[in-house]
Length: 67
Image (cartoon, rainbow, N blue to C red):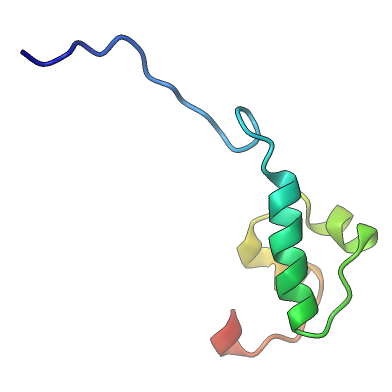
């Protein structure tokens, strides 16, 4: 007999786990590896955005193969 589903746990990013600090660290490592600065000013500009838009937001000149 299959167990009955009692509940479904639905979590959006930041609701159950505050992952923003990990996102900042990983994006910072990527941006710095390309030779660009990534500090408080840059963090404030990209917070809440998709990683796909970061090069555009920070006006980074990134080769296509690295996007």
